[in-house]
Amino acid sequence: MATQLVLWQYLAVLFACHNIGDFAFQSQWMAMEKAKDKEVLCYHVITQLSPFILLSLVPGMHVTPQGLVLHAVLHGITDYLKGKGYIKKIWKDQSIHYVCMMFEHAIGWL
Image 1: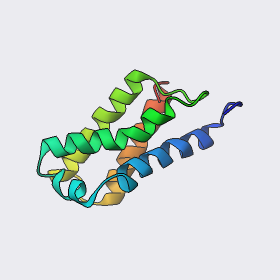
Image 2: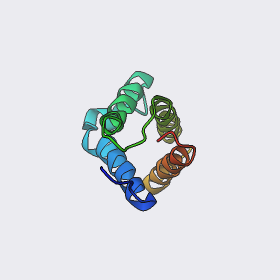
Image 3: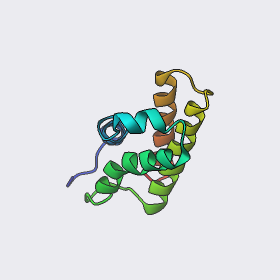
């Protein structure tokens, strides 16, 4: 990434990382059990974070250590609330994740 990405391109990269980590890297077992077991939820959060960790190694991508921690915490809280039934629709769950990433980017941490 020799040149600065424009905002929509950068957000598209963040959303792609999220989708890879949240869907492609999540096993069926993890998807079923994360709502029942906090340890499995932690495994999911770490798995979901892995594309962002890799992204932090790419020159020109501004992914900070505190951004990774904040992202993990916000993702975990959102999925915990979904597992407890406070968030019922997947589009609401994903919208919250996307808004969180936009916030993390707006403060310069992701």
